[in-house]
Image 1: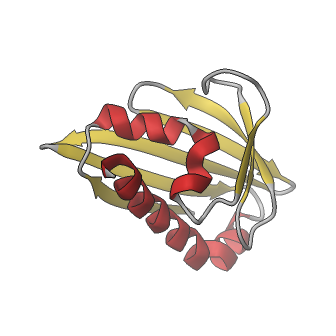
Image 2 (image 1 turned 180 degrees about the vertical axis):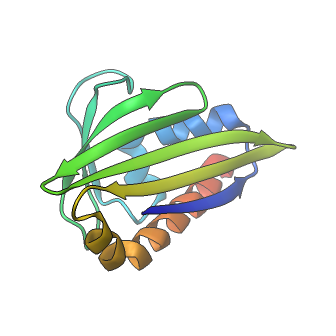
Image 3 (image 1 turned 30 degrees about the vertical axis):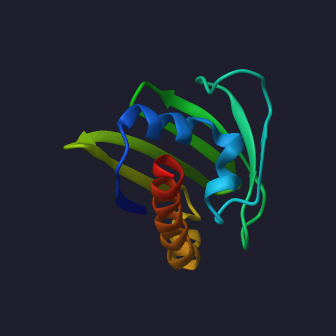
Length: 137
């Protein structure tokens, strides 16, 4: 199951991806994240891990699987499920289109996806709106 949210941010893609990649600051601009702890020093890179706490969800560790100057993806694993988060920016006129998505895979993906779909979509939309405020404020 894949859930996706697109939003427009009136800022250059470089500013938006920099905000997304600076994951420790997420609690400053989105209420969907209450705490972030990087588990390795330095910038995000393939293999780096981050512990994230979100309201109404259990704390999870996310490991970066792909990263470039316009996107990054990471995974969180639990018994029976792998959750992949994707963060992508694309130039769009004078601003940026941000695509945020969560994908559940594994034997429990259907159950977990059905149970969390509304909350996940709300959080994806909150993150897009928070990026708009943070990157243009």
